[in-house]
Length: 544
Image (cartoon, rainbow, N blue to C red; front, side, top):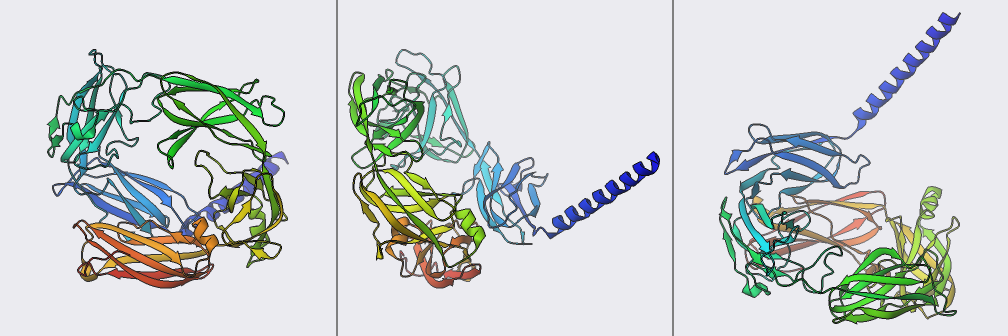
């Protein structure tokens, strides 16, 4: 009996396993897959052993994936079983450089079952720049950042490395390789006003060999496969560093506020700067401290906990030649706004459930940039919400956690607020009605050049709604700049139904070579709209 029972159980497990296998095979067979292939060459000859990866960067499918390959002896690579989506094909060839202005990667929009060939990467032998960084006393600078900057321009973007720099070794020596032929400036140290490292000494940005300004830098001319040695840099004395400290207190009672997150904002000028949240919190006495500050103008701000009823203004200060003490951040009871979010155009209960998983946030149009987040509130299952801790200002709203929920109208007591709603300090606004639509329209397009002209420049596309209202304009939801792949294809999803103008631009490598074309299309929810835009590169240059 025991043996018969065991046999029966085994049969059941075998049948169950077989059924699971059939289901998994059937599911796999239904995956809409495609293929991508290409070649990596140097002066027309295939290069073996080059790593190639396929990274999903934007997708309208539900099959996220990542593929890796290596070029064969002829420089060829191939990816199979690729699900639809927007991908980046990336090659790993550190000793080589792109033969043209393209980076060693290309964007490809893959459609269902499509075979894409000739995604090629022409390379040249990379050049090398190497040298040593020392201070004025001849001591080597260890693990100092080195920046490579194109010469002859005001462009300060770094052109080497995934993190924008390389570093010196324990001898103060650096080596940058895989560079395109061209003219370069090399620099070490931090840019003016930068925070620098909080763990070690910092030095002012210095260009090879010892210039404080880019205009005084010695330019390095690098040939294909060439090496520029002894590109040494001598930096000045280490920059002085200072601290700033103070307390966070309740503005009404004066009691210290503990465990409050704070950050520092560095002012570049009156209208711009950069903010950093330190990760630290105030202690039991409400005290905070900022370290490693170079001379300059700063502000310290706090990050109230979620759903907090208070806020605090940024406290500005200047570091000159000594530590700053005695700063006080006083909190104030903030304004609040409450109301209901209404999902228009659908009765889908699942969408209402998804909406309630997100949060509603308020963004003041005149708010200081010295803050890393905006006040927000929970969205309850019935659509009701409340946001506390608001500073006075003109506010717009958005939904986080649900990028396809687009706000289309703000109203209160029957009055529509197309320019946002004005909230004064300590106001308690109730009865706000926020109308939201679920954006489920999609656009698939392609940009072509007439007569099969090869693309020798950049293709861009922008999407603007016709008759956009102020809410769409102020929230930026009416405009989109989708990524265009190497073949001129693009895909946009999450669009509200309506009429749009699609503008395609071709910026060629020829000076002044800017051409564009426009086309009007209609987007419908749940439908993919196709569009083809053709540009004549021989027409007189024009900007959109």
